[in-house]
Image (cartoon, helix red, strand yellow):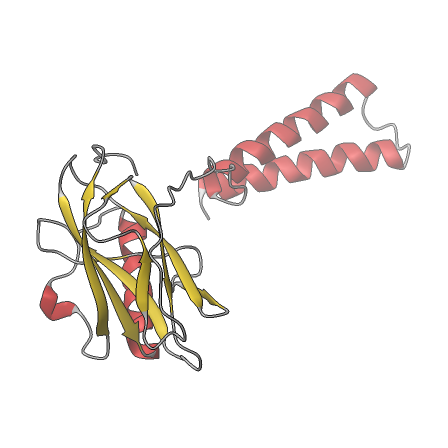
Length: 208
């Protein structure tokens, strides 16, 4: 049992003892001692909870840039990017948006390829791109130098390829290390359907 968990449990017990003594009028402790135990219990629970991960502090609201959109002929015939535009400059966090044809039932993934020639799948909290009513979107997070060129690649994937990308991202997050994927690591069932090149407007290193 970890020290953080022990601290949390001890705090809960102190608070519980103080509450029981007060609610049942047992008078086993003086009011000041009871208040001290209760306060100490709350402090220990908060400290242990934050350290142990039971209580997560709110993360700052992520600011996302939305670029210009290009016009798409309808009815949509294929999965394609609507924004950002080919050759445009992008912020460190940019919302990539696109469309898909009616009846499309595969997952959509955006993968970034910077100048290090590695591949970085992008995801929101849902991992795959969000799809609804013929449109899809995902936050793309860039981490390179100002002026660096990025290939923004869109893949259609089956369940196996989606699972591979999701597990890869989770592994990187757990290790706090993002080495990227080699081209040979991209699943064969991930089919490229669109690609464009963008350039970073700002220096994005260390942003994340």
